[in-house]
Amino acid sequence: RRFSSRSQKVLSSLEVVSGQLDKLEALANEAVDCLDKMERGVVPVHAPLRNTLAQLHGDCLRLLSLGGKMLSVANAAPVVALDALNTSDIVSAQEDSRRARKALVNRAQAMADMLDAQIARFDRLKGAGAHAQLPAST
Image (cartoon, rainbow, N blue to C red; front, side, top):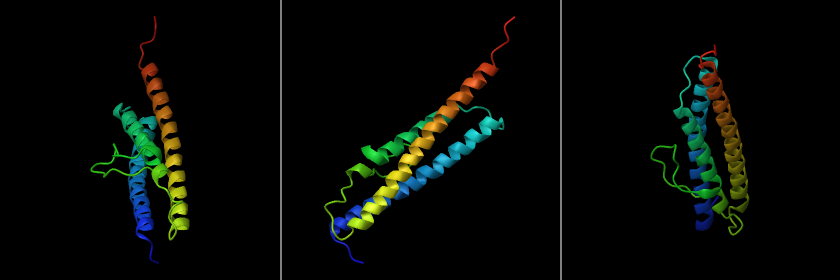
């Protein structure tokens, strides 16, 4: 199916966002795996992991509403925020672009929510570890 140049531009932007979101999801899964290992005591609490989780969360928000360069994806080109992609003024790909945009917004929001929970989990784990290492009072 052939689309107008404006429609093709929106669809291309959505593909770029989808690719960046795929990369963020892979990085988030790695971070959660590391957090799982910390929680099980397989590896020690690694303080920089919280920063990684926070950067991933910020990148989700960047995809949703801010746009710009991803902080946690190496060599990532700046992306257009999903909020900035106007699907109402295109005709030939309006339905396809609206459906894709909605799916991407839902994925990015779900990941941001999950990362919020993982940051809180890290903070609880770090707090529990800090308390466990305190010397007993005499």
